[in-house]
Length: 242
Image 1 (cartoon, rainbow, N blue to C red):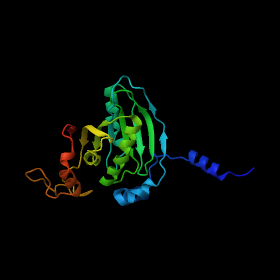
Image 2 (image 1 turned 90 degrees about the vertical axis):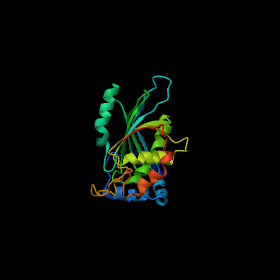
Image 3 (image 1 turned 135 degrees about the vertical axis):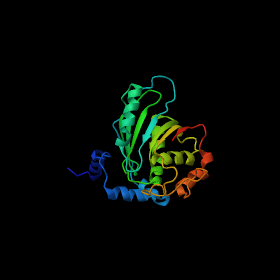
Image 4 (image 1 turned 30 degrees about the vertical axis):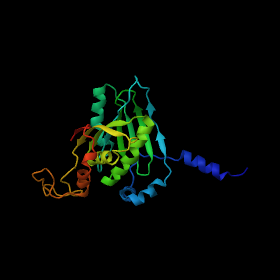
């Protein structure tokens, strides 16, 4: 006979839709992107209660081995369509059309779809919900996305296929966590159109910043200097194709 407000709140929260497939507004992408760009403001993003929408299945491993997933990342303004053709071809080459799709936002919410396969190299497609973001935002994505996947699917190394701005972020992440044994580390990496040098800012004019005789850009932006000063942290045993 009495209205139980606590129980109603719990039920409402449980049934509330968290559809990360919906395109967020420009205000959402810009505002969350700004918060994620600066370390002192990232705690505001972590105040949000994490929600995991799990529609994925996990196959049993087909043997006794450690899995090394192949994870596909898109870059600035990209999406699942950016890596779609590559993943379809990879699945065709494996003879298995199953793969895991992971949609993630800057608040730490995850949507898992598809299948984590039981072979040695499960294919994973990552889609960033706030996709109009810079290098520091993708760095932040990597800082919680990779440990989340590694813990959930029990792997310690991975192969990355990265497009555009995700390429330097993969390298930066490996350098940043080089000494963290529990953080998943690169085994192999393929970077497509990676803006490692030359680019001074988003949308800059081509051919303005040229490379000198040593192969370095005349104008070195902070991202290039970050990689340059930390190059010894990048494991030389990582197979790398740019």
